[in-house]
Structure formats: structure tokens, C-alpha cells
Length: 184
Length: 181
Image 1 (cartoon, each protein chain N blue to C red):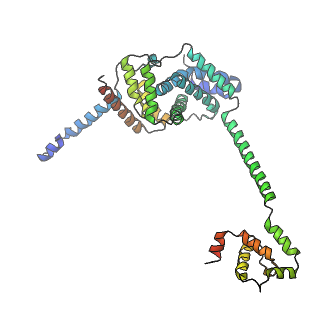
Image 2: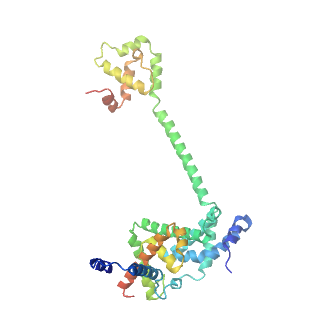
């Protein structure tokens, strides 16, 4: 049975049940947070760092959460920001242009240590990596997580129209990329 | 040439259904994109390798991080901010004291000197008759005194004080404000 967000938030308000509420929250969202991060950064260790950082931030800021949006939406917003932050940090640390970080991630997929899917899965992931970071986030959320445009709009603070356009372009680019690879 | 252009060239009216068919095409294209799927790729999670027992490890990792950060992150940064502000004030304070010790207020000493000097000493120092550039010197002194907020009293000035006050002026002030060519 899935734990209700309201129950978690109510328990978190009280000192004596705060730890329990937080454990419930981790159990409920850890996989979704991790997988969103993993699809963005490919590497397990990076996805692990992002996930832990997200929950540490949740612990310190859950009291300030105003419940204007759903708890899941709020956690996803922290996760997507953290993913973008880590990717930016990677570029800054190694003074790399955008394409080189993605090149490094592509290398990880091709090496096969991080991913053991079939060839079509790898080709799709490689095509996704060629998208700009925010478009990649939109594609991953829509294609894999099946998040609605309305929810995504709250998470990414972008209009529904812009998200639809972004997804449309992402699919077209992926199709072109896969056609080049003679997969379609 | 598209249908619309062809119709225009034949000066025919564009059929009503033309727009509907265009609209349907666009709609189909959009729906086709939003339903686009590469068969067998939606469940990508199974393809990424995750170490065994990882989910429990993640929970433990989060707890360890929280323990290490038992003080909220923003509290630490606030403490650091306070500490750095305090340190800045301390450094500025020490710098001012050191500066004052090395460079005692010249104006104060100068004023005191003028106060102590007798009229004859002052008049002898200025020696208006002997100095060829006295007017210029006095102008400079006046400017320097103005800078230091002191009333200009030429009869109470000594030669060294005039020299000192000229030293106080920057080259630009001399050239710009006194119009020396």
C-alpha cells in the first residue's frame, strides 16, 4: 500500500514522528528520484550523489514546503535542479564545453559498465544524450516517467506550450538521429 | 505548388474542407509525436546496472550525510557570514589604527604648531616681501586648508606650514584648481 503524502507531511510536523515520516518519504520516492537522475547523468555514482543531496535538501526544507504543489512535484523540482547543477559543475570542473560532457556520458554507455540493455536501448540513450540538457529532462520525464505536461510545467516552471514544443523537437531530433543510425 | 496556390491560380475558391484537412494533418502529426514510441524502450530502468542492495545503501548514505550536517546548511553559512563580517571589521579597524600611528594627523599637528608660534615667528616665516611666488603659495595653502576644513589665516602661517600644505596637495589639484600654465 502506498503511503499518503498528507500522512508524511503531518508526521513530519511533529518532532517525535519526524524521523519516521522522513523514512517513509525516502522509501516512497527514492527510486523515482534516483531514476530521473540516472537517466540524466548516466553514471551510478553521480546519480547516487544527486539522490542523497536531494533528500538532504528535503529534510532541511520540508518544513518550508508550502504545499502549493504536490510533494512529488516539489521533490522532482529539487531533483531536476540538482541534475542540472551537477552537469554544470562537471563542465566547470573540467572546463569542458557542453558537447564534451555528453561525449563522456556517451562513452560510459558504449563501454557497457553502466548499461546492459540491448542495442536499440543504447542507441536511444545515445540519441537522447545529443539533446540540450533541458530538452533531455523534458523528454525523459514525458517518455519514461509519463509525467503530464501540467505537472512538468510546475516542476520545470515552464509553460505547457513550451514543454509540448520542446518534446516535439526532442522526438524529431531523436527520430532523425535514429534514422541516421538506420534503426527506423 | 501546394493545393492552396493551385486553387488561387485557377481563381477558384479554396474549399472549406481544405482547412479542416490541414488542421487534421497537423493534429495527427502532433498526436503521432506525443505517442511516438520506440518499441521496447520505455522500461529503461532494467538496462541500467545498479549494485545489489543499493536502495538500503542509499538510505544509509542519506542518514550519514544528515548526521554530518546535523546543523542545517543555512545555519552554517549564516555563522560563516557573521564570522567573515566580524573579521572584516577587525581588519579594517586594525588597519585604521596602524595607519593613524604611521601617519599621525598632519593637520592637527600643524594647527597646534600655528597656535604655539608667536606672531613675529609666523610673519617671519611667511616673509611676503622676499618670496617671489608668495601669491601662488598662499593660494595653495588656502586650498589645502579648505580641504582640511580650517579657516584660512595667512598671518598665522609659517614657512614650513606653507610647504607642508603644498605637499598635501596632489599634482592634479595644483594644476587644475590653481590654473598653473
